[in-house]
Length: 350
Image (tube, rainbow, N blue to C red; front, top):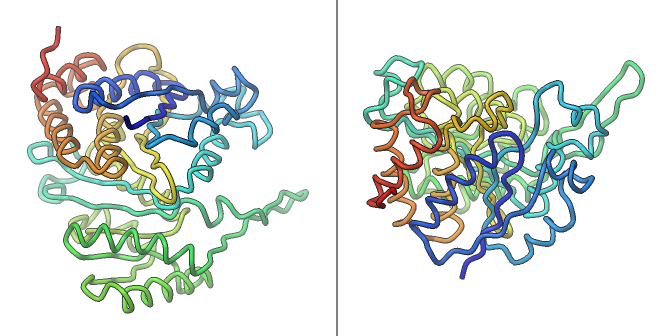
């Protein structure tokens, strides 16, 4: 039986993860679940945001379902040495799993265009997949330092790192509309010159059926909200991908609608992209849609069960129309929305 390691994490993480697990149990009763700690709660319990017992549990996991990591800005965790902060546990988790490609779908559900801050005619039909390189660049390079009144971080990429994430983007485009936009800043950054050169060479060598376009990151930041339908698959490096995917996250109307999958050498990591929302933690009002849709991505990409994934996604779309949560202008709390998803899947809710 497939083993799913769950890492509920901090803030609203345990609440939205529990909702996702409940849906997974219904659609895939053969799955087994094993819960472990990560982030600030792991530090409080074990003195480490990514404790060894959590690391060991990943060895035979088929997929990992993550909640959220981190606390409020004034959290005592933020005064810890950087390696002990909750976010460092998340970076270490990604590295341990070898997850080098982060897939973030940005999709406006039919009939829910009114939730978007964009005009309905701009939001209608938006369906973008952002593929972000996740293990390289400025976030991971060890050439970094604060020295008095000077500080620096280094962005570095190698051809193998660029090619492997570009392959993921080209593969995804083959399942979609066959268009990839590679985002860089090649007019001023040498690392972007390498990125552009290697992505183009890979396309010319192995993916001639894919239409490839290169765009600068500042241009994409404007066009992704002013003309989002121009994009199918976007591939870019770690820092640019972090910023662009958060910017694009506003298009569907709420971070609570944004799932993600991080794929690579081993078990995939699946998580909502929203934060830990400590101000509403424990109140039972968090929107679990992104966590539930991350569970659908787990089924599709982690376990190759597309039919079950489709079933969940259809149920979430229906629940969003019938029982929207408070962040979407509705009244549903976490329990009500989860029940609506289960009912839409044909599950009696007692």
